[in-house]
Amino acid sequence: ERMALKREIDELNSRYESLTGEKTYTKKRKRASSHQLETDYTRPENILADGPSADQFEQWLPRDYFKFEVVHESTKSRARVCRITTPHGVIETPCFVPVGTNAAAKCVSSEQCKEVQLMFCNTYHLLVHPGSDVIEAAGGLHSFMNRHAPIITDSGGFQVFSLAAATEDEDGPELKMKRVRRTGKNSEKTNDKHANNGQLLTVNEHGTSFRSYLDGSIIQLTPESSVAAQKKLGADIIIPLDELPPYHVTRERLAASVALSHRWMARSLAAHLKDKRKQAMYAVIHGGVDRQLRSHSVEYLTSLPFDGFAVGGSLGKDKSEMFHLLNFLMPLLPRNKPNHVLGIADPDSAKNLVPLGVDTMDSCNPTRVARHGTLFVSTANDHDNEDAHSAPSSKDGILRIKQGRFQEDFRPIDPFLPVDTLPGYSRAYLHHLFKQNEPLALTLASIHNIKFMNFYMADLRKKIMNNEI
Image 1 (cartoon, rainbow, N blue to C red):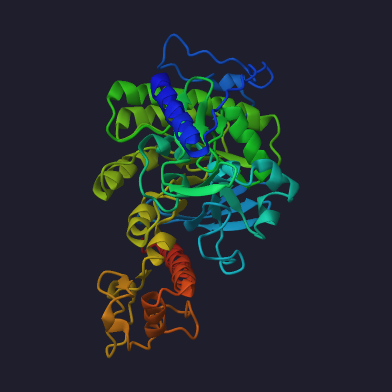
Image 2 (image 1 turned 90 degrees about the vertical axis):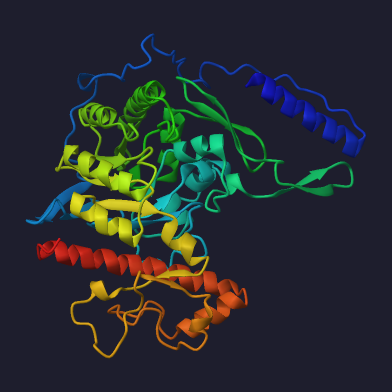
């Protein structure tokens, strides 16, 4: 790893000299003080050891600023309708949680998605820019992004560990963005897609370090610093730091990762409990597709005073494996606290996850596919009293609006929804915007998919109340 880093530095030095004719010099970096390193955490002799036991933490008691109420449990499945009360509003579950990566759902303003009950923002991206100090100075995320409803932030771990295997994911700019570099006296511009790509540098007991995709600077992320950043961001629900190994790892490596995540999350919880700031913290259940490890993760983390539980890590190679895993896992979680499934929330997944008792779920998918012209719509199965003279919106619940058949289709995007998601805008108009590459197309399509998911989840809540699910 060090040799690879040295080679990278040598290559950058050579390029700099060839472009500017000047030699680089190295300024010795001061050794980090003990205050900067917080505590020198040493890996335990047994790498499969969990963190401290429950008796080393305060007993969990209901929070006056974060309340969870089960409104109704279906008699037909584990599906339930719940109410989560936070300092910034109430969340009716089950509920879809769109992702606002950089404190914004892409192409959509806070005003345009004010009906969203809970928004997910990424600590990693906000650490890179503008920085948690800037957002704190603005009054926190709610003030910064002009949102007056609940927000959940992650620890930053997911994006950091994604750097180990970068993909062309447009919702993770560190994985794809080309940066313009300014070098030399004349500030000559050069486009280099590898110039400032984010890079995972170290992972150890203390935490992780990574190279910023924005300017190449090295950022340390520890359980304590992640919590400190999320305190400055001021979300209603925060997530402790965890490690995310890929799907294809040995069981030994996975078991060691689960144990490390447990130790990191225990440290995160300890830091959080010292300064709660009316925030709730959800633990993240790990273990990949290994049921024994998942069970152990539930057993350890539910013994600690977390306010809720998220399901994270690899959930399988496909949806079938994911549904089987969650069918096993969800009954293990306590029913007196809220739960959240990380990174999965499209209509098909929601339909399968809600009967298992999932409360909230987040995903970039609805807005990402919208920007590529894929719109969610009703199917014939979604309606009991469908007009016999009308064809269903779509057999598979999807409209690919760029297709030529929509050029003269002047109907609303989804005629079967109780409320028009885009009043006054037809399929033909949206088709036209996409074909002409108008930016408005991305905004309108994203608004539609967000509103569709909101209506879809509201319909599921209604069916649960009627014991139909």
